[in-house]
Amino acid sequence: MNPKKNVALRLFSLLVLVIIVASGCGGSYMSPERALRTFSNRIRQNNINDLTLTIYFKDARELVLFPFSVEDLVGRGWYHYKIVVEGNELDEHKELLLQLSADYLIPFTSSYPMHATLYYVFEANGRTIFSFVPQASGDDSSMYINGVEFKWNDVFFDVIRPFLPEDEVTHWDRALMPSDW
Image 1 (cartoon, helix red, strand yellow):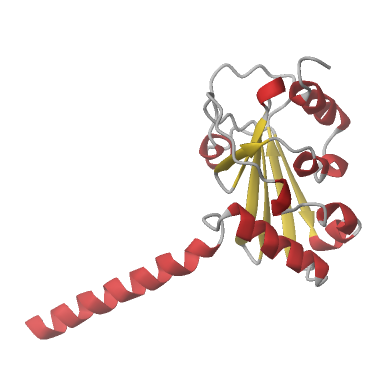
Image 2: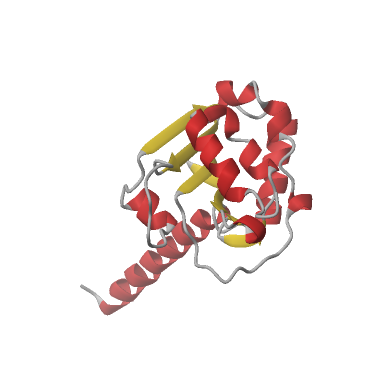
């Protein structure tokens, strides 16, 4: 092959790779604040038909002795349950979805590693809008939104309550409750 064509082909391949990588960064790498604003605007505009909520979780009765990452839970399939909620079902809970706001995000850093035994993600057309991992530790409960840790706020768990089995909700309610209650 001609050396000039070889260089041109390599540059073109590199350009295509850069475009592919850059176009994939709008989802889970979006800042949590921006992701929640995007989500809220979508709900307010009634643009919900292509929205999907997927919830992954381990059985609440199973004792887990080591930290789980989202990759462990979802990527390796270590979840027991997967619930998929489509846009038409989410439409019934629009008021609840509108409560999700960046105003509730208070930066926080716990001394514990992420422990993803429950994970949910809102997606539209296969692209992540935002993801959530609760961290239950009573007084120091926190949450990860798009991989960034924040102080716990009930509204981010309340949004999935209608879709979870009752025993799972009860487990999380007990785990997230501050120790002085």
